[in-house]
Image 1 (cartoon, helix red, strand yellow):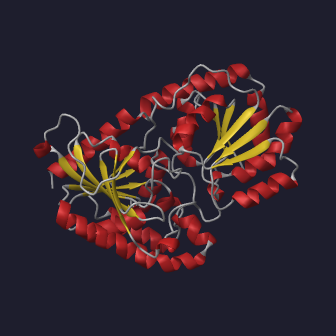
Image 2 (tube, one colour):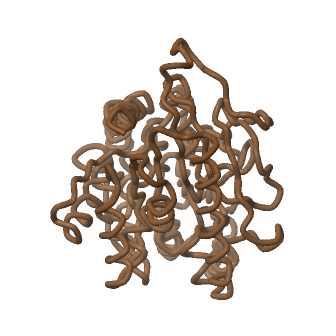
Length: 416
């Protein structure tokens, strides 16, 4: 979860921003299934955060799915956004509150929405290709956006970026063939972690793939010198299986027995919330576990600054899905909050050495022991916090990340 967008309604494309003359600005089309619906939307906003940092060098239009309550066309931070309809408004529930894969698994009837979703996206891309004539296209996720985009854009060069669910969460030979087909037809391919790069090369050994993560706003997410609350544990994220919150809750009785002052704050929403709250009640943890639900993005830094320890107990879900990188972990690190994460491959670009700790989150005894050890060791937490922030500043700050994407997209446009 990252900073929410500043919303400005408008029907026309964004005008020039910065010092770049309009005639030299590259026209860029961005295609995504996840995008903020309105100001303060708690849905992941990293696609928008990248787009808005490119408006000084590109004229940008974004295509994404409509959702109930969202405008069909508006301008956010200089980024012109078009949202296509794919069902009656009350049924446009395929994307939000858990993500496409989670929603399909929990409510199989939503597969009926997929043809309209795909057709609506294809038609929207074709319309923008005629009207906007982009010189480069950035498709987020190989499936479905990369697949649909390649079929719709014609000869415009496409950069496809995989964020994890499209790679880890779609197992089997059929989806592998789709990914290979897309990878063979895009002009460039990026993934957000080294683990994902290795996964791509395992499927397509000849693929030319670059590791290019999303970023963190290190000005907004920064320490402010306040004293952290003793024993305060924090979880931030969607309440879905791969985030592993169930395992943290199962570990909490042992943590509280050893550290009676320990308490857990859960920030986020998703389809598992009712079941998780029920389990908290069954374990008698109501006094030390609280669910805050979805919060506006601008409230998150205060929670990171208050916590003694950020815990992200990532796991590999039953269907194979797992975290591609874990931007909430990077946000906590940027706020100089020490972090403990589930040891899935995608987080190792963030957590290694002295930047944080990894543990098998499905081993509740080991998870509880790691939390207890860190809560009791102020010096170690302080060391992890300092090293973690420095690591994020060097490798994940938005100026660094956005500049890398800008150079790549400009080079694609120049060769189009």
